[in-house]
Length: 199
View 1: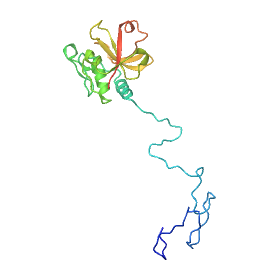
View 2: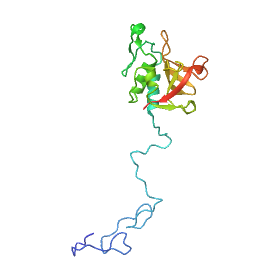
View 3: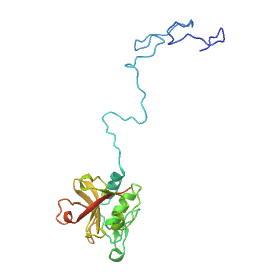
View 4: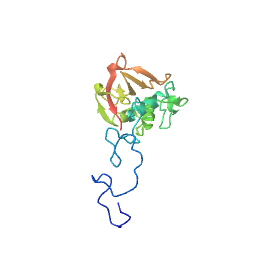
């Protein structure tokens, strides 16, 4: 602070412990009862709201890539199965016996869903089985890929895990994208091969 009469810095002033030589008349006392020239007590100070703060009572949710993939797959419930169908943009005309149908096959659905989360997968179940981190059955998370069949070779089917033993998948020709409880299924449970978390 510079005193107008001397042009030299002042060593006294607000918060210095000594009265200031400023002769201006003080205004009304602060509404919180603090003396003029003293900072408000910590208990009465109002914290600045940061842009990352959120309203009380609202849970902050952090969506994982698996959540994004699961949401994208769920939005395609009821889409027809099409052999060779599906790409990162959505359902497509298949090949061979799927050439007359726009839809998804099992790996086409999972590659589409994960593309919505920014992860590129191959359009073959065996390739997807090697594209990510292996996950134990007890550690499955929403969005993980679950694989079935194929004996000791590449798996022959893939679905996307939603939780509570349920997957969403494109099962076979003549069927549609749907949810299945694979843990309680007499068909899928014995054929379970493992799971992968892409990304």
